[in-house]
Length: 363
Ligand SMILES: [Zn+2]
Image (cartoon, rainbow, N blue to C red; front, top):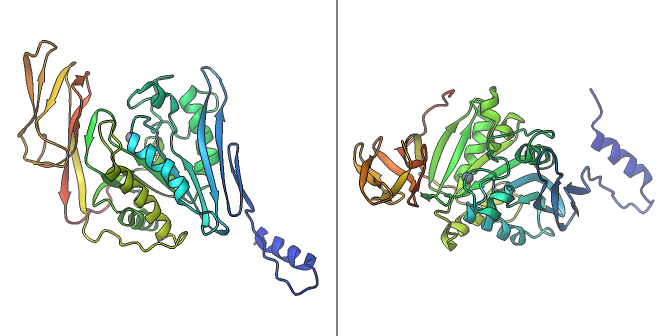
């Protein structure tokens, strides 16, 4: 058995302490550094993870590190993998200032906008520089294209340094979305219990069950799956829709992040977990066969029955080309918020609500 390094440091510090009876405690993590942001205990630092140019252009991912005055868990709050999911990005910019490093136990790494080019060019779902998904290419590749190089650095500097990863999303520009969390499960009882507790604490009352097989690369490509495969606690929340960042959606995400910290006893905050969430145990979506124009007939959150008309499609001259029907009965988790339709674009997603979650099932 190896002697824990922290105890060695403690023993050394005690022997080196002045003979005043003063107790000297060792801190295994006196500073926390992510990219160019380095914070000492009790400090908040601002900086960036520089992604050097490679086979394509480089980029820079803004990051704040809040290193609590007292040790505790390290939580990473991440958003903007989809750079036009504005409510989640705005929410994290507000969380940074809402945490007082002087009273914080533990540390918080905040990266509100991973996919900078998506934000700047208003490109939905992917990084316009290389066409890759920022939530579909973990663990990244230092020799790959911009998305892969960026994610390799996020994996090393953000994910690996954290104990808990909160991945925030919001309905994208083309999604009229009902706020919900995901309970990402791996089938490991301890891991699933920890992520369930955070999902209930976060505060969104609809929770989608997301069963992952992290033994497969496909189960580890998104941030939550990758983090879970490293033994971290991870969960995902979404609020926001159609390019808007309403005070309600932003506030729900800010409160949720603070609720996570309250549950982990990092801040002094009373948290009332959701007692009776609506579990979404499966879902089905309708994708477009061809380009056209879409008009929604129901709103996010509507309860629909299978076969019900939920939208219409026309060509660019307004001539009807088809109806969009609910693929299953359930709740509309999101529906297309813009007329633009391309082949395979998601038109509507319907979830199956349940009073209780079903047991883990390997996907
Ligand atoms: Zn997203």
